[in-house]
Length: 301
Image (cartoon, rainbow, N blue to C red; front, side, top):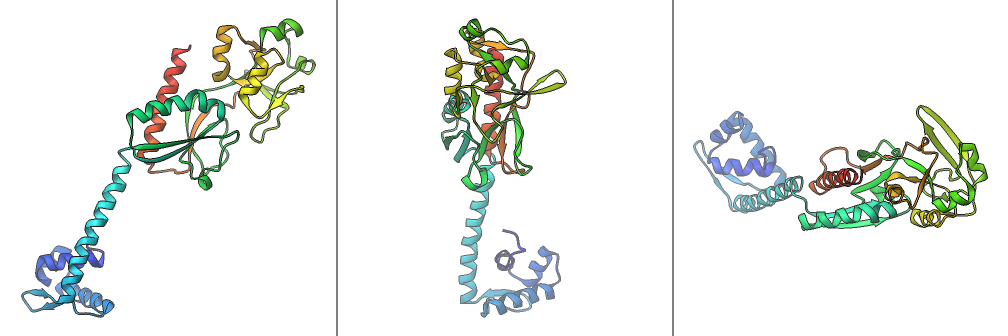
């Protein structure tokens, strides 16, 4: 502990054995050291040291104060070391919030691998339809899509992502392939009711040109997996993230509809409330998740 504190000052004074030696160590004059000691004794209401021109000796109260000061300083040093160590070695509770689909498909398997490597970290994965209030709920890390909700949240981009229109081949065979966005008015669109977006207005971009289309349909849900299941059953057209449909398109279970259009504000971010001094558990998990997502993407392209 620094000698700036009364405890540190008194311990230094006793160890140096004289006011002059302590003054030299502290780069002060002996009268200044004597004045500070007197102020400490006045505050405590007891005499701590007997002093002569050459040496000092502790009173019984001073001895008790000295021994307690040594113990307190040792405990503070151990505490500071543990806290500092937490910024280097991952340990403790890590609470993560993600959406149901992405959390199940990608985040949960990464947590499994992470737990094998860092068994000192206790991970809680909380899946919700809408992002949780990170501060109020004690969330260390959130996985979110698209723009950030406010400036108090810090983010790191994990993966580029877009949303595309898609449908099952069986739906296209029965109802035909739309040739323009306006054709969607005549199609059954499956609507996902999540977050606070306007559900039935799809915002799409072609190059630098943006368009919106108001859609309607007989089916809607706040669960992306349920909605995607309806699409694969041939019941309609849906706007869905490429991370979720890429494998189905590759396998022929889904087709892209008007692939020249995409909803581009859908990148995947790791978000957290602190701007500086991230704990090791958060920092290392973000790095680990980022590497795993990049590898998964490269393996499937």
